[in-house]
Image (cartoon, rainbow, N blue to C red; front, top):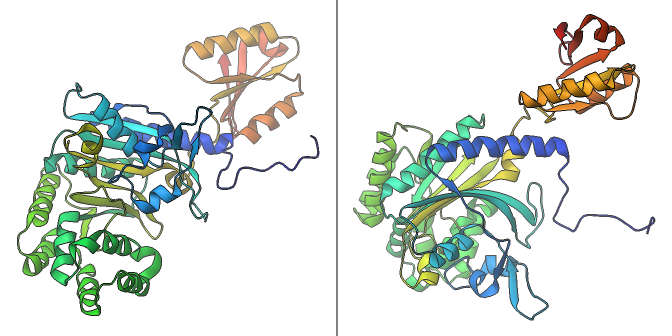
Length: 414
């Protein structure tokens, strides 16, 4: 056994303590903002019945193909969830007595068997908020406003929210000459614009059987992006005031009422690949990095399980990417390390307990090391303060507190 080749399952990774401290700090910030908007916690299982995950109208063929699925020991078809939205839809369908609107947040692992590259894994985390039970654009505006507040709180500045509407995109594709039966294929191709470029999108649209004339029209309106008022005027000249335009106008007006007058643009190239989106779609983009979160309105998906449509909207934050982008504020959960010198363990342990009761995170030396070794250990762990308690300190009643970053020391009562 000692010679066995140890490795992680492909597409997975270990997260050491310093990474988890940074990640947990980001999660704590998001949770605080979510709760300030009235979202409440929910947990759903990582395992779902395969008929739920593979139901038509949920993730789409590409996502279904990436989903881990297997037979359990009782020969039941089971799958690992590929997002947190489908399990939420199943939960709502099973709990129709919930007061509406139902606003929830959820943090959890998801799994997709997809291509591995920098920043992309097969096991990763998402942190979602969703509002169920209202078709008001105010709910969508609240989701976007919450996302902007979250991004500011995380310390990101070079970001914006790209906004579009699937109803509008459908109408523009039809205007360009795309048959209704090919809309989903066209949307999937458009959604890859950032990854495969204009040439790649044109090639995929052509493979879908869309004419060159229609493709040129599509590529023309995909270039439209910018300040909402300017874009909406251009869109109305092309498509008139259809439902998608009306929803975008309402959405933008609510954002302005809420005090959000910047940090978002209308971008007609934003499609979002999931089949279940029915109205506004949005994506949180950070500088040259790209998407750190995205979502939209999905008014028909819950009806797949509930038997009747229930409106819903939400956004998912990519915690892995957010954690990698953030500059860690600290790398240890411990606030204070108690360095013990000589036969003073009884007093030192009592002092530890006193500090913990005051709400501090405290460690004490467990190996009987020299003072220099204890200080070296605390420094390597990134622990910000060390309190030295020795026989001299015991006699005077004062311990020495050392700031490990500045090197400054002060005396304090034991």
